[in-house]
Structure formats: structure tokens, C-alpha cells
Length: 210
Image (tube, rainbow, N blue to C red):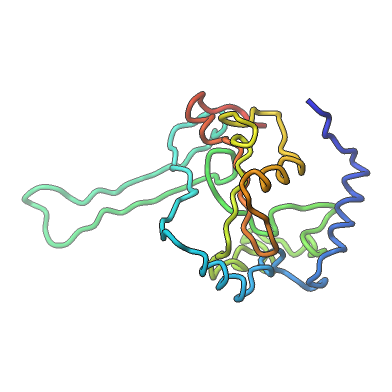
């Protein structure tokens, strides 16, 4: 297996190179969401043919496992049963969850990662509060994320069921998948890279991805 490691200095250089290349200016707080222009969303909608929807959500799990040590906790308050029950009653639910990990599906806001003491576009960590960081909150995507979805299937490209833990998907893989699937990724596309994680987990069971 090729060594794809990068030194801390090389990573820092790449980070600042990409940071300074943002086309939206230093005051931007939306990041790549800026690519989802009304024109691109309309163009994506015009490509719909079958009208079939496919969920990318992972099922909620309540049992601890190697990759989900803090699963969801679900509590249900059941209405009073029996002939003595009086009037209208409801079943009530409460959920608590630790969302980060490899078992639950979720989306992170731009305030999720700190590097060199700052967030995206040099928003300072000092602006953080226990309730979040308003300037970079997930509210930026509150109107929904819609666009042209493109899935590159790497196991299909390699002729296997899934990518094994510790393996990597390289830029060459992505380019080869484009060619194999006769598709090209463009600005404003929503890119999904399939590695077969969920299928491997279903067949072989969970593992500690860390």
C-alpha cells in the first residue's frame, strides 16, 4: 500500500494555500454552499427523470458497539391504558444522542473544526459559546441543500464489495471513476464518494474506525 502520509509542515502549507484561494472573500460564512446558485439548482432539477428518492440516512441504533459507544437513548411515555383512562392522551418521545462517530449520519457546520486557533475564514475560537457559534452555524444551510448529486462508486471501480479500513481513495481513483461512470463533476455538484462502509459494517459487523 502506498504511503500517503503528509508532514505537519506540508499540511499547514496546503491549508493556508487553500484558505487564501477562497473566491468569496474573507467575510464569507457559507463556504461551498455558495456554489449552489439558483441557476445551478434549477439546472439540476431539470435533469430529474424517474422521480425516485433514495435516503442516505443511517438507522438509529440503541445498542453500544465498537464504533458507537454512546448510542441514542430513546424514552417513550405511554398513554394511560385501559377502560378507566379519561379524555385525550398522547404518547411522548425524548431522544438524546452523541452524534459524532461512524454509525450515525449527520452534517457538520463550518464551526466543527479548529485549526491554528481559528475556524473557517479566520473566525476566532473566542467567538465560541456553549450554544454554538452563530456566524458559522448549520443555519447557513437552513433552507436545504439541493443540487446535482454525483456518486462515484470506488468499490465498483476496483471490482470489490468495499474499501478495507486503512485503505485510501486517491485523486486518481476519483478521476478513474468519472471515466468509468461516464460522468464529470462540476462546480455546484454534490459529490458522494461510496467506499462501502455501511455494507462492510452490515456483513462483518462494526469496528473501531479510530
